[in-house]
Structures are given as structure tokens and as C-alpha cells.
Amino acid sequence: MVKENFYQGKTVLVLGLAKSGYQAAKLLHTLGAEVTVNDAKELKNNKDAQELQILGIKVISGGHPADLMEKSFDLVVKNPGIPYDNPVVFEALKQKVPVITEVEVATSVMESSIIGVTGTNGKTTTTSIIYEMLNQQRVSGTAYALGNIGVPASQMALSLKPIDDAVIELSSFQLMGTPTLKPNIAVLTNLYSAHLDYHGSQEAYEQAKMNIVINQTSKDVTVYNKDQPHLEKLIKDNSKAQLLPFSRKEYLENGTSVKEGQIYFKGEVVAKVSDIFIQGFHNLENMLAAVSVAKLKGVSNEGIQAVMHQFHGVKHRTQFVGKHKGRIFYNDSKATNIEATENALAGFHQPVILLAGGLDRGNSFDRLVPDFKKHVKALITFGQTADLMVEVAQKAGITQIKKVKDVTEAVPTAYALSAKDDIILLSPAAASWDQYDNFEIRGDTFIAAVQDLINADQKNL
Image 1 (tube, rainbow, N blue to C red):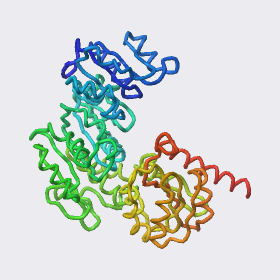
Image 2 (spheres, rainbow, N blue to C red; image 1 turned 45 degrees about the vertical axis):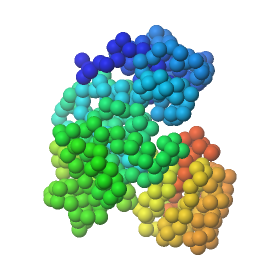
Image 3 (cartoon, one colour; image 1 turned 90 degrees about the vertical axis):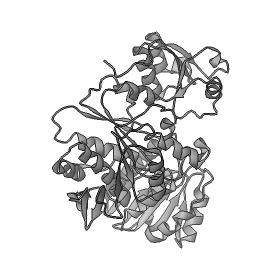
Image 4 (cartoon, helix red, strand yellow; image 1 turned 180 degrees about the vertical axis):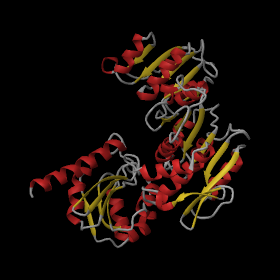
């Protein structure tokens, strides 16, 4: 039995497949909706579309026909990556047809508690830590990590029980289409400037993020980063939930914070900062957010400490890759903006050889000059922003600067400039789309290049 079934008998267009669209179409079909799927990929090369067709779902593939909205749809479920100026989406909105995202469908029928996690940076790491903590010493039910982390919420929506927890990573793209989303606990890790090419303005981006709290009531909780005054103001303006702040900069009597090397939750010592394996101020903030949720859900301090010791990070997010001849390699390919690279650099005390560069979105990188001065020994740069990165390095007084073709060439170039105890860090400060389909492929390329380097060195011994 589902919480509610608004979709029975509705005519629904699922626009764009990928993982989320595929699972949304299956879920809607199960809920009794008349589903039409439209995907740009040709049917003969589209396994997901073929499988949906076998289920009896209508599939229109090979493009987005201009007359698609001539059929009367009650609802459009849009892939988050499709912009709102897409002709089909534009026409739907013109006809006043609601346009939502897959996570809206999923959460509206879930019976479990919902913990939503968003923010400019740290979403995946925080979601992963919460998932691990909530499953520590658990007696009944299970916590599941869903959403933008890689498992569509629709895939699990009908399987979740009231004793379970859905920990859902939510991007601003997803949140724009969630008119009824109401997490029991909403987590906001931080808020910076991002995705302005999609949202059009910082204000629109921020309002999309606020959709995670907008429907919460006094029975719910909003966990947020108090170290950002602007975020705190947005939370207080938009959330009617109980507010639970966290801070790494000031002690909070009624929140989660740090004092004299200890992590406190509402005055109670939970753990030592030194219990945390993963490095960096940003990861301390992620951990404080996760501790807030864990304590709200009744996880013991011992369970929290166990996760702090065991959690070694998420792939592509300041991920420890390996150590070779005293050099330590980290993959932070998820650093697709300046703030993420600032955070990564701040986490290291050793000299850093930085691999950076990527898609040029028209941003200035001058903000990185102080971090470059403090942390960066050498810069290896590539992609559309390479010249901009060179300028920043020169302003920071860095003399070892190399422009290379791509990440594969960057790794041996960085190694040649390195010495024992140096950090070789991929943290691009830019999106990957100028050279790689996504940041995961860019990160995997880095990992493979590091392994090739090690293998070649070992053969020469």
C-alpha cells in the first residue's frame, strides 16, 4: 500500500530517460498512469526504451517532436538535466501542464521517513555518511541512499516501509520540480553561486534549493550550516520547521558544533574531531551535518564514531587513490566549481601539485589566488580554462606551471615535478564537459593514469 496515489488514470509524459526517467516511467505505469516516454536516442540503440515498450508504455524516440504537446497530458515528468527553455517543456508550461521531476513522483508515494540532502557542495559525501550512520547497530528497518547519488528514488519508492529511512541527495535541478516534497529532515550543507547557466540567476538557484524546506512544518527539522549567514537568513525566511544549525567555527548550545577538538550535539560530547578519517574543513562540515541527523534518529555515539573511523570518502570527492614513492594521489573530480577546489586545498598541509581546468563558463578564478599561494607548489592545467588557470597561478607567484592536453597527460607531468610527501591532487574547479562526458569519467581517467604510472615505475625497477 502506498501513501497516496495521485497518478492513477493520469496521462503522463516522461521527457528524457537515463536512470531517473526509466525508473519514473516504470513507477508511474505501476501506479496506473497512462505513460508516454520521449527520448532523444533512437529506439534501436535504446535498451531502456525497448524494455518500457514491452511493458506497454508508449515510446517516442529519436528526438523531441515539436507537436508532442498537442496531445493532452495531465503531467510532464522531466529529466532534471533538460532545461526549462526546451521547446516541449516551454509548451507544457504555456499550457499550464505541471512539470515535475522523478523525485517528486517517488517521494509522494513513499511510506518511509524522508531525509533530503542538498547544498552546492558536499551533498554526496553527507548523504553517504548519513546512510552509513543510520545503518549502524540498526535493529529494525534499513536506511537507503537514493536520488542524485546514483540510485533513482523511484527505483525503491514502493519497496520502502514505514520503519525505513530514505536518505535522498537532491540537486537544484531536481528540486525545481518538487511542489509537494516534504522531508522529515532537510539538510543544507552550504550555498554558493552555481549553475547560473541553468537557473538564470543566483536568486532562482537559491529558491530552487529552498524547495527542500518550503513544505516542512513544525513537526519536521531543518539542519543547516550556520557558518553561512546568507543561508541562515534564507532558511529562516522559508522554513517553518524546527531549526538545527551546525557550525565548525562557533560553539552552539542548541546545535552541532566543535569546541577544543570535540564534536558536541546540544552540549553532549559525541566524538573527537580526530576520530574523522577524511581530511578537510569541508569534510568536517559534512560530518557535523551527518551527526545532526544521526542524533535526531537515535544513533549511539559509538555508532557515529565507528563511521567516522571507517568512512574513507566518496569516489571522485577528495578520494584517496594511492601512495607511490612518498607521493599521495587524491581524486577530487567532483570539484566542478571554485568553492569545491578551495575546500579541497584547505584540507592539506603538505605541498600540493594541482591538476585543474575544464569547461569555461565565463567565471573568473581570481578567488583562488590566496589558496594557490598558501597550498599549491605547481599547477598542471588543461581544458578550456587552462589559460585562466595559468593567470591565477602567475598572480599567486607559482613558477612551476605546465599546460597539457588532458588528465591522462597531466598525471605523469605532475609526478615529474613532485617530491616525497607532496600531494598530487585532481581538483579541476570546473565542469568536465569540454573534454569528458561527466566528472566521473574524468576522475576514472585520473585513477587509471595514476595506476599506469605506478605500473610503469614498477616495471622499471
